[in-house]
Every structure is written in C-alpha cells, then in structure tokens.
Length: 276
Image 1 (cartoon, rainbow, N blue to C red):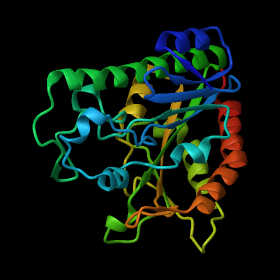
Image 2 (spheres, rainbow, N blue to C red; image 1 turned 90 degrees about the horizontal axis):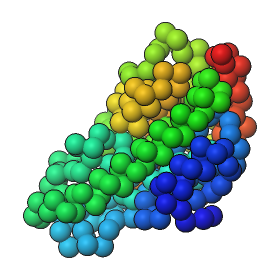
Image 3 (tube, helix red, strand yellow; image 1 turned 45 degrees about the vertical axis):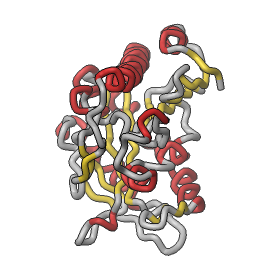
C-alpha cells in the first residue's frame, strides 16, 4: 500500500492504473485491483479520532465504537474496488452532507464540552471534501468505461436497541430508482437472506424496515451519476457483542466468504442487464 495525495490518487484513477493507497492524512483507503463496473464502500468503518479533539469530547471511546460500523470493510475487502473511511464518524460523518457532517450531539447526547473552534471544523471538513473528490473521480471513470455501475454501500446497525424483531440485513431504497432497478434490489435482498452464518445466526433480509437509505454517500452518487445504482446495505451487529465490545471474527469471515462469490455474481448480473 502506498501513501498518496488526493491529486495523485485522482491521477492514477484517470490513467486507469491499479493501486492500493492510503491518502496522505490517513483519513481513508482505496484499493483498485482491476477496473470493474462495481464498487464496495465502507464509509463508517473507521475508528480514528484526532487526539486534539479528545479532551473536548463527552463521548467515551466505547460510545463512539458503538455507533460506528466496525469490520464493514473486512466484509468486502476481497473485491477489486474498495473505498473505506479510517476516521470516526464522530469527527466528521462521511454519510452526511458537509453542513451537517460535524455533530453537535450524537444519539441524544451532547458531543462537545465546548463548541468546536472553526479551525477544527475546517480541518475535518477538508477530509470529508477530499473523500468525495475521489468518489467523484472514481465513478466518472467507471461510468465512462462501462456505461453503468453498482455500488455496495456497506453499513451495520445496533439491533439490540430495537424493541421489536429486526432483520439481519436491511436495504434502504428510498432514494434510488426503484422502478428501474427493482429486480436488482430484490435479487440482492434474496442473496443476503440465503447467507449461511455460524453460531445459529439466522439470516433475514428486508427492504426499508429499519433504515430507508437516506445517507449522503448514496445521495451524492445518485445525484451525480445517473447510471449508477447504490445499494445501502446494513447488517445488524450480529458479528459482535455490541454491548460488551467483543468482535466475532468467525462471523465477519463467513460474511466475507459468502459475499466473495455472491456479491460478484450480483454485480455481473447487474452489468449484463444494464450495460449500454
């Protein structure tokens, strides 16, 4: 893996080079093993939190971890194109628009002891902006090359905070073209529902049951790229103990192994159907 500037990453994508890189400020990683018409994204995978923010933050390290999406990058790491955040959403949220990306409060609790100085906000929002520069360059290249593209927008959610039965997998489709892509939406739901998981974990998959797919990553891509489908895909945190902060690596591996073949098949079928 190389350490590259934003402009160096953009240049490599424009020149259609394969590479694996971390951006120079260590805010996100990108890997392109081959140029294919699908992308895996894990915008909330990151846990880094700038040290200069620590003393001003009212949330504990565990409280931050609880709301992040740990291991979502690992679940898709075997695919050719993967982009993932390294910073915590508590510094800036890549799945929110710039004007709301820096939290004042989070899940009902005030985040900062004192309001962040403007200089701190600028530093965080520059990282947010750089991530989306790369996303834009990448999707421009893929739509130019293939005509269409599909993005698997991987997230997780805390199922134990719900007071009803919730699905293992949730697809949020409120902001995509459901008429045009209804077959791909349903086939992805069905694929997820068939996933074998260890520890007697049942796979269920529903559409717009717990979340509707209102994230900025999906909205940004959908707004700028008319022939790219984004599937906001949330797994309940059955792959860890969200209350004790214990990871279950065998469950993460089972998800990765299944998606290694089934996600690729789904992406290929999407391209065969929609290529221009």
